Length: 321
Image (cartoon, rainbow, N blue to C red; front, side, top):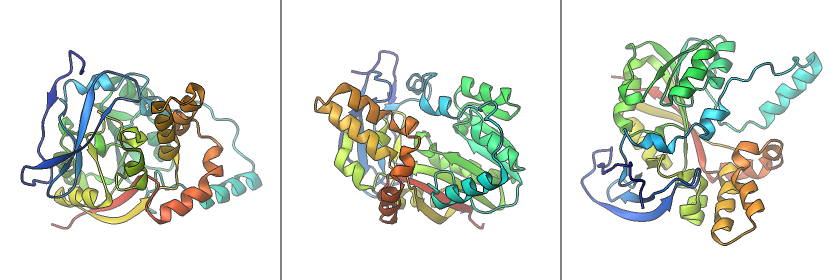
């Protein structure tokens, strides 16, 4: 049963396909245990998966509590300890290059103007500002946006669909795990294209619903994250969405990261009465992986070769008029 204050709406396929879809699965909010059961359907024409019906823009905020993971995990960290010495710094740099996960990979660009969409508590803005970029952001959560502003960054509060910007002003636009949350992704991506300079880059990440882990775990798939994930993309459907909005994909990276797989196993075991402590530890793996991400890296690297790690990073450029 849905929460009394939750309003649901139906939406057509954003790619403009004729009416018609098939049910795929039903699921619940596993991140916070909030009430409601939600359905995922597949467009009969293009195959895009979407949550249908879905919470309306004015009521979905209740599924983004203040302890929502990205709000907490992207805060600017004070201090950080003394910088490593020359040799240690060189070795650490070489190690990190060797085990790159491609989670927030961007092309080799000279610093310019950058916009981050979503997840704007400030950590990525701070990283890019330190690298010489002029940065600003847009964030749905007022509290998260305020934390970023407290760090000295210009961040608008509200949805991307309602945000304001300046035509042809950004060299780079980043959106890490945000497109799947948008109610009107085509309109939002067209807006970003309008704000982008000629030749500008769009770098985004999304879960990959074409990965085997989705077919195996289904409603227990960690990256399903109902009802805040309104769309569930494959490489083909994200390409169709970006193309319709004025962007051309240049490269797709399958991230070398197995967090989805480990956390999904925790949900799967929980559904079958597994030990609560084990289930909880597995479910919290994406936020607490630490050195285990390096231990699992060889397997993640191998699975990424076949597009089976469940997360994609995509580079796209503004299409020529």
